[in-house]
Amino acid sequence: MNLKVEHLRIAFRFARGKDAKTSVPVRDVSFEIPENSRVAIVGESGCGKSLSALAIGGLVDRAEISGVISRGDMRIAYIFQNPMQSLNPTIRCGAQIAEGTNWSKHEEKEKTAHLLEAVGLDISAAKKYPCELSGGQQQRVMIAMALAQEPDLLIADEPTTALDVTTQKEVLELIARLADERKTSILFITHNLGLVAQYSDFVYVMYAGEVVESGKVVDVLSHPRHPYTKGLLAAVPSLDAPKDAPLVGIKGVVPQPSAWPKGCAFHPRCPYARDYCSSDSFTVCPEIAEDKNHPTEEKS
Ligand code: SF4
Image 1: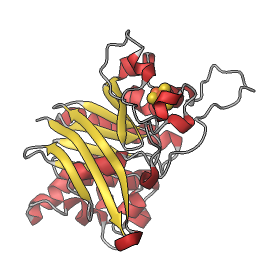
Image 2: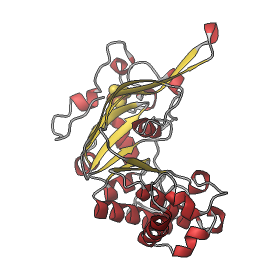
Image 3: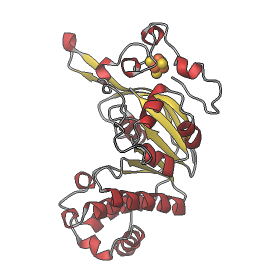
C-alpha cells in the first residue's frame, strides 16, 4: 500500500482584524512512501518535517490544510521522540500498549507479552508505570504500542533524540528489524544524516516548509546538489578529520514560518546565493539547474 502526499500546505492564522497574521510552516511538500520501504525526511528543526508527518495521520488541529494526502485505509502508527512525555505517567505500560486495540482481556495478556518480548523487555514491564523504566525501556514500550496497532506505516519522529548514543543504536536497529519482519514501511523524521544513510533507502530534504531535494539515499549523499543538502552533509563530523579541525555548520538559523525570505528561502544562509535567488523571478535553484549529472529528481 503506497502513501502519496501532493502539494501539502499547512497554515495557521493568528489573531483577527488588523493584527491578523498567517504562519505557513509547510508550504509545498510532496513525497511518496512505497509499500515496505524506508523513507527519511531530513532537515533542521523548524523546517516543517514533523508537522507534515502529523498531517498524514490527521493529527493537525486548527490549521488550514490543502493539498492531497492519499493513504487509502493504510494504518499508521507513530513513535515520538520523547517517550516520557508521550507515555501516560498514571497508566501501567501494559494497559497503554493495549489502548486503541480491540483485544479481548485474554488476548491482551498474551499479545502484550508477545510484543514486550519482541521489543526486548520482560513481561514484568507490563505492570510498571513509565517512571519505573529507563529512557531506552520507555522507548521500547512506545515501539510496542505502535506495533500493537499493526500499522502499514510506522512514523518514527526523531525516535532516539532523548536517548544516549548506545541506546540510540539499539532502538534504531530494533525499529528497523521489527518493521522488516512485519513488512511495515518506515518514515524516519530526522536531522541526523548518519541515520538516513544507515536506515533509509530514499530521502527527502526539507527546508523552510518545502522539499528542496529528494532521491535515493546513495545518490543524494554521494552527490548532493542543493546547497542546503551540501551544508547538512558538511556539518556531519568526520572521524578522519584532524583533531583541531573546526566544526563546520550552516551559518544563521531557520527563519520563522511567518516570515520566510522572498525567493529561495535559503538565500540569506547560502554561500552560492546570487541576486536571482532573492528576486521575484526566482523559480529553480541555479545550483541544481546547472548540475546535469545527477540521477535523482528534485525541485528547488
Ligand atoms: S536558489 Fe540560490 S540561494 Fe537558494 S539554494 Fe540555490 S543557489 Fe542558494
